[in-house]
Structures are given as structure tokens and as C-alpha cells.
Length: 406
Image (tube, rainbow, N blue to C red; front, side):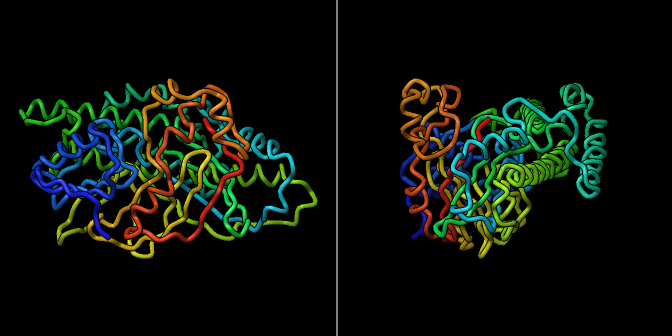
């Protein structure tokens, strides 16, 4: 099948798995394709849409450099999903009870835990190691330490919390009516601080070195410099923190379900973990016969037989997929439905009645505070899936019945 569209007017080509793309996103892709550090070609997934500097839904292979703004500020944002032995017929009639139990267990929005949730020895050990690594990074960057001071006492309290925006926790059913837990979150406030700090530092370095950029947000750190080494260490920390955050949240959700389900329900257990995967991150990989840094900004790894999660909007289906290892996409695929319009435009165009209609059958918030997350603001997930049939195959189709938003 291959890419649906190829742009050849840059230093390297841009291969797109869609023709449904706005002008702003096309400009951003063309800008990235002019950079001397980009190797081979840029790939754009079917959920592609404009971001800050680099396009959301893009896969950017760079040689000897990394672009901090392409990774973004929600470093390590991604998904986790597990399948349970529970089935639809064992669920309570009042789904609000399940949603309430999850919301009581996992802080959402700007909220955080009052005490650390890292209680067992393995989890507490991981948190201590994260703390030691963070202290090392902050010691080398006093300005970062100053920015993150308010997080010194809170990053560990935000571990196991959801955040806001498009982050969510869902209970879903697959086509065999088995229950799944699926969640989406990243590196919380501390990851945001790190991202902003290094993005600004890259801009200053580009100015100092008089690098001519098509967009100041495409400034990079070159391999072999102290800034590069420190950014790699920091982004690695944030990605590990995001993984741990999702793991802690998953544990809290499963414990909440155990408390909230009626006593008559047969003892249940986790049967499968789909994957705990990033979709805003950078990794060192080999492509086109070269050692590269691959930044996936709103895309997931889809190597051959690798499992991944592609969620729809809060009223649509989601998919557990298996990668086909397509080299043209740099072994990548879409990370979700992708926004069709901005949050401002969504709030202008839709109202609470629209939200109620578009989330029919889902136990979730239906107030004005989440109108910007209405399904109509996103692309059709089934169209997105159809456009990437050469990138992944569907293993499970999920439909949510409970959705918790920040």
C-alpha cells in the first residue's frame, strides 16, 4: 500500500500515510524536511496534525542530533492496557460506581496524591532511583533546579496521577465482551518543566551558533556536546518516570475495581498486558543502514510483531495492534485518532448537548469542562486505521463503557 502522498520539495522526502492534512501541518513537515540533521525521510502518520514546531503524528530520524521541541513537553506520554478475566455480564448495573472508585483512587487534572503511592519494595526502590537521577541532572543545571523547585516535593506525589487534557483512564470491552483497562498519561509536571527548559536552551544554542532555522522550535542539540548528553539523560529520566507513572496508575485502578465490584463477582485477575508504550519520545535505532535518533511525536513503534495501543476519542473504538515492521514508516504507526480541530474551535463549535449525544452509552463527564475533548474534535479512528493497513494489523477492537478525564 505504501504512503498515500510524498512531498519531494525538501532536502529529504516526507512520506504521508494520509491526504487528510491541514496546511499548517504540511508547512511544519516541509520545515523539518529541510534540516541538515534529518536522515532518509520523514514519515507522517494518518493522525497527523499541526503541533509546536514539529508536527504531531510525525516520525523524525536524525543523525547525530535531537530536536527537543520535536519530543515536546509531555515527554514519554503514552499508553498502558491490560485485559482482565472479567466479562460484561459480571459488571454492575450502575457504572457510575466504577467511575467514582477510579476517580477516588487516581488524582486527575492538577491534583496529586497526599503521600507517595510507591509502597512495595520494588516500586519504592524505583522511585528512590528516579530521585537520585533527578538530583544529578538538577545539580548540573541550576536554572532547571530553580524552575523545578516547586516540583521537588511533588514529582513523587504526582507519580500515579492522570493529569488533564487528552489523558484518560477507560474501562473497555473487546468483541468477546472481555473487560480491559486502558490508560493514557505521561511525565506530568516535572516532564513539562524539563521539556520547556531544554527547548529554550536549544533555541539559545541555535542563536549563539547562528544556525539558520525555518522555525525556532526546530533547534537541536548536536551529539558530542554537553547539552546533548544532558538532554539525553533528562529525556531518558522523564520517559522512565512516565512508564512508572502509568504502572502505578494501573495498579491503583485495578485495586479500585476490586473494591468497587459487587462481592458476588467471581475472583478475577489480569490475563494479558497489551503494552506500556510511549508515543512522545526519542530512541536510538537503526534505519536505512545508519544509527539514528528517532523521534516519534504522536506515533508508536510498530516493529514486526510488536504490540501497541491506538486509542480513539472518548466516544469511539480503540485498537490493540501488532506491528508489521514497515521500513518506510520507520517501523511506526499512528498513536490515536488525532485532532481535527483546536481546543478553542471545539469549544466554539460544540456544546454540552453535542457531548451527551456523542458519548452515548459511556459513563463519563458530560459537562462543559471537557467539550474540547468531544469526539467530533478528532479524526475518525476507523479511517485512521484503514489508512495504515500496511503498518499494523488489529489484534483486538475495544469500546469503552467508562471514561475518566482530567
